[in-house]
Length: 330
Image (cartoon, rainbow, N blue to C red; front, side):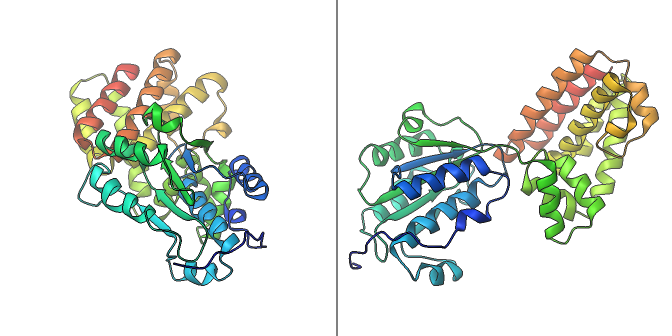
């Protein structure tokens, strides 16, 4: 095993690379500076807002305090004292075997170069009940040198796990921050602004919208779906679901944004406040719908969208979303 090393504050600021999460970054920096690290953290918040990037930044910062050469290993995409565990490609959940076969034996070994071993569990909200119970044993009696970071899109973990972690909340990123990020990636300003509007504060959603060759097709398809659902024929629900099935999460995000535009128009009748290029005649046509029903549909669509990421039946989800919109628009 590696030799004992002393904690040494250095000038490498991995957390400084995190955009749009100033509150979380400030908390973690203070914790590191005061040497009050918890043995386990729960990073939770919406998809794509920087949780995983921040977990890696925390891990690299902590490891670097003891290992002056750590940066060399990070550049190569590996460090012997950092382990990332995520859902296997052919599975819908993180399994008990991943906890008992990867995390537990890895933490049983003492640090090799640093004074701490760090495990990042990505998509912790996808743990099976058996995996969560197995992880609980590690959290109850963690090795003194261990740091475990759970990254979750949802706060649906066992209360016994949550109570043994230091929670760090992450929030949707501002549209300006997302748009600036996209432009740094080479996206032209107009497209970056539109993708930022659609992203709901998620860097990953924004990238997917901005880099897709199908964005204009998705926008046009969403307009047709809203117009058809507003026609009142129940068959339009199933037709809309079929159109959405292939790209359900992206299409439903556009529909959600368009529904918000209708509600904004109802309240203001100001075209300059609409966030998407839209058929103004359709907006006016839909503006006589009940605002309460539209708001309820907006909430329901937003919640249903999260299930696309759980490998749920895409056609069934799309049908439920279409039906919710149809009920509000008919």
